[in-house]
Length: 260
Image 1 (cartoon, rainbow, N blue to C red):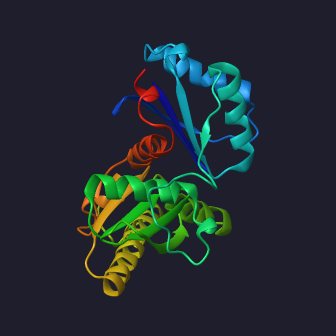
Image 2 (cartoon, helix red, strand yellow):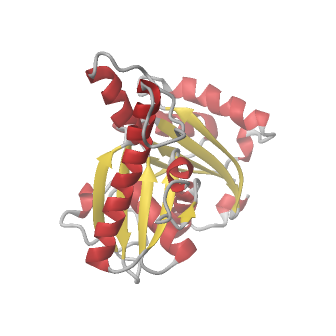
């Protein structure tokens, strides 16, 4: 079996594949100070709860935008699985031609998403990932990575509103009944959710103006909430990054060991 690990700034998403089948996946909070042994015990409990022994994991692939946790998960993999993990970084086959001015600047998660989106859906695409930051990535009809945009994530935006405006409270991110709020809470919910939908639609429209009409694929923790409020998102795939990691593992190490 193949363990795939995507370490983001806010969440870590993990999945276990048997061949091409995702048989289990989890989302946990990112704690950059947590040690390898702590993550190992947390992961062990998740695996056991799903009926998967640690000895069943025969391969590990890791993508991380949090540098300290690359070391932690490499140590975890080597100590508890006796496996040297494949880490997404320089020298890795990505299956994507990157047409950025400096390809090294493109985050590993964005390339993983690009690979998965093109392999799954083909054609000219815009991939929107609703994470700590919201990223917009454009792919050509040939699957080339053309570039994109980075915006503050909806969580960052709402947290900044609470912290920097003394009289505004924390609010739950739910859809208000109307765009015109009748109290402070509903007014904030309207501004955060509907305002963010406006941001998403605005960037998608600008991408389409520059590149031509593209199919839009959304992923990330808040993708489904935002997608319900716009007709411009065609497909929501919350496990897009996990699928991209599996595909990238196959490109670099072959699929045979993932199915053991």
